[in-house]
Amino acid sequence: MSRPRTFDEETVLRSVEQEFWDRGFAATSMSDIMAASGLGKGSLYAAFGDKEAIFDRVYELYCDDATAAVRAALGGPDESAFERLRSHLVRAATRRGSSGVERACLLAKTTAELAARRPSVAERSRRTFEDLAGILAACVAAGQRAGDVDPRLDPVRTGNSLLATLRGLEALGESGVDEQVLVDAADSAIEVLAARR
Image (tube, rainbow, N blue to C red; front, side):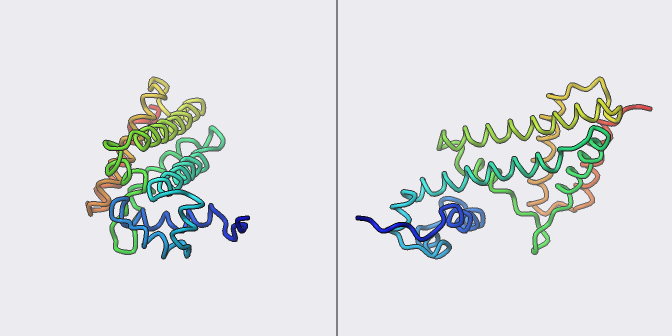
């Protein structure tokens, strides 16, 4: 009879997430995963499977977390929707790590590294991007109901455009583009949304 597990699977996955985020999938070894999780190879394989299976679980959790965080940031009353959108874009333009350079999110890094080779990753990334665009579109529609966002804009198309802007801000930030350039780009994207009084 096998012994019961003495670890929480989600806690292990979250500890391993940092390794994949820092190194990428290919450069993360099972030794790295073992060190981060504190588990031996046998325990990891028994609980999760191989490195690919471990990564899939980590990525699923990360995508769920990312979507929930954006939903929390952009949810709320119609009257403050425009300001929530503004804050969200400015935050993306000004977010920096300890090195002074923004680290791309695991969603962006994984999509770039693995989507072309692993259909399951491409599909999970696509669903996450669609969810994020939908949340942005809902916030745009809320701003329109409040009279702060131009009513002529299509919320779905605008949500997709904002998602592309956010992804661009992230990529430029990671490459070290001056923060003021990013803030100006975020401000420009917001100005396009504003209802003409």
